[in-house]
Image 1 (cartoon, rainbow, N blue to C red):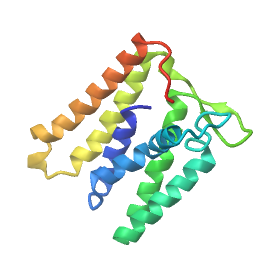
Image 2 (cartoon, helix red, strand yellow):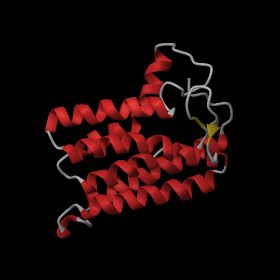
Image 3 (cartoon, rainbow, N blue to C red):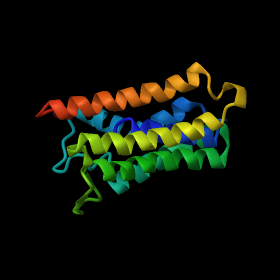
Image 4 (tube, rainbow, N blue to C red):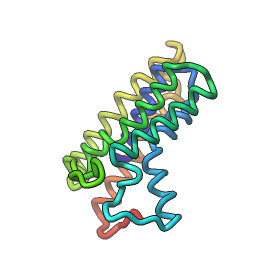
Length: 175
């Protein structure tokens, strides 16, 4: 999932407005950023994503993110929500791609990345749903403001660009 993860972050922000949006965005992207850091550090595994997207890896990342959130704001629900957003990453990726489950376990996923129009529809739905929760967290007079609407437009544009790029190019490697 690409921008769909941002949709999940937006939805979480709508559920807990005492946590900054950037915290939820980081949580929603944490497995991918972990992947990028491992790539830069030249850490290679026989199965791509094992240290960032497997269930044990995501559990560790979620525990770390939730613990850090609790240490900073002392809000148990906020900490659990941040951890849940991290965990949501791998389950969202099971819809769009193929990810490892655990060491020696199977790769699972629906692989809709191979169908960009379907991917856009699925991720667009996640983005829109998350944005609706986010939008509802604002006072009614601000819900239709250009800034709130721009968040939806930007996330959808990012998703569309990602689907177009991956539909028109071959051989792009993550690492």
